[in-house]
Image (cartoon, rainbow, N blue to C red; front, side, top):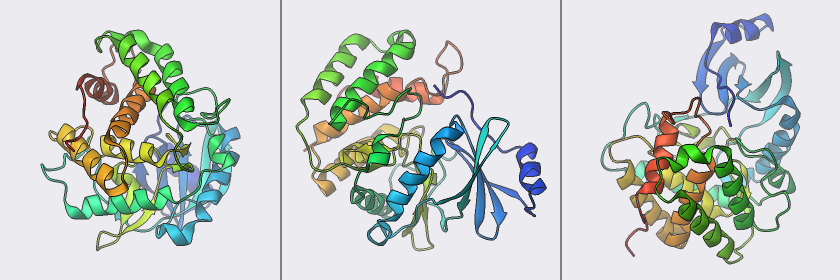
Length: 320
């Protein structure tokens, strides 16, 4: 479970200023941390919930992704330096170009229709990431909220994901069971279905948090960069990446369910993914992340309510 979340503060502006950076200003903040523009093409990132010991592994993951730069056609993060301050991890990274494709749906709700510019950029990013081979470093990553590398003890991604679901439900399953009818049955069917998935092709990098602010584009809408790897980054089935992207692209707007169905259908057609598999992965994601932002006992945070809503919708399989 996430123990804290960084927000922009005067403390961190002073921290970077004291280290010789002039004109420090907040740039962005999200699940992984708060980012400050330091000048000279460099940003400082104050991480949330990640201990300094794991940054070396993330740095290797970034390097693995960067080796595929020519085929990606968009930039990805590069860690230039690492510090620790009062137990908090601080990294210095190359500033990535472009502007966020759109604000998060929790901030600005999208309209009823997702435009071709949005869906085209998302398809481009998904296609690019699917071409980045999964590596040993990616398999050793621990996803947010868990206590061990996702792939530990497993040779197949669906089996690793199934065990992650079981561990996650053990964390605060009572909270979820109070709001999801027959939670035990939902978990059992999800886990059994994951284990029954056939062996797919080679695994690729999974970003795991492709919300609109994490995709930067140029003035024509072409993706220039993908940011904020780390929340659910691993090696895995590219269909999982597509499934999660379809589900989280609009989590909080008035047309969220409609958009999830539309994007799930689009990705099934575009990439020839089985619609049932995409829906299964969406349910697994909700079960694996439902409590990551719960601070009390009432499950009042938006992400928790979104997970409950997804698990209670019934089949989301797009019409064939």
